[in-house]
Image 1: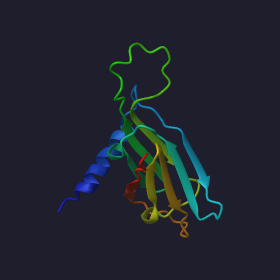
Image 2: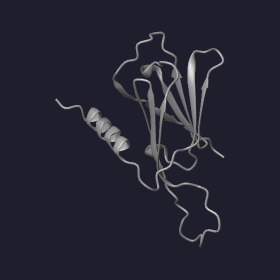
Image 3: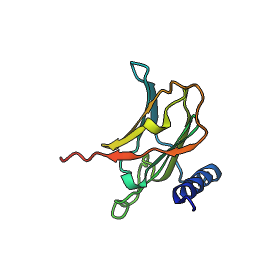
Image 4: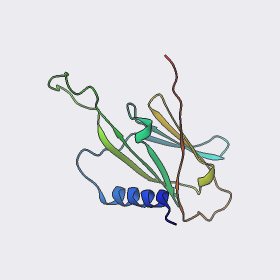
Length: 142
């Protein structure tokens, strides 16, 4: 029996590793150790991205964040006089300073900020498996 999730995951990692092309950007990211030292908290600024376009994955002590931000208002704006907002595919790859527990990790996307909480592992040996972190999307009514 084939593992479809594993196949998709391998394809995404291969694509991320091989592709560095114009239009791809790295979002601003903060990495912090919680005050109690029990978790690494990663905050990624990606306002305007659709939650369905975001992927958060781990492999050993490397965190991958992949996604796409689409410029839905491009038509009708005219000619740009100043353009600082990046659109298109984005990716972030970062080595974590401490081993974390993959299975207890959570990701929440709210108000344009992706927050990933990775509990610090008590086991110094990091699992070699790949894991996709499931996300919860919080929509706050205005």
